[in-house]
Length: 181
Image (cartoon, rainbow, N blue to C red):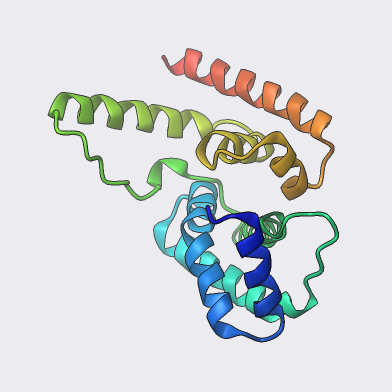
């Protein structure tokens, strides 16, 4: 991830209407936002559509963005969470995480590839069995590698509450993995 100063400069420029600066923000955050959405909706086409909607919303709203101590990235994830919530409101569907697009595996050893794929499928199936709030916590913490402070800003909950949710999410995931394993 780019350094915070550069991101703040790009945000300032994009807020003033600089489309090149917004393009750079898009390039910096596209993969993370897409991954977050994809893990929540489980359908590649829907994830691509929702990600596009997120960036369109960001583009139209960035002029109103104000730095009130919350990182820009948290603001983006809030938009992403809202778009995913809208998706489920309109579709009334269940999360199907096992349908997430495959990430190419660069391991040379075919045995390692099979073990990795089996482990990934098992984790994805197990993750789909826990409540959406716990899914978000697991995805943000262990897939997106966010700190508890960053997750707190994204979910708009106190850091202490994030720690409790994280502990409960891991316990819930462990129970499901133990059940299937």
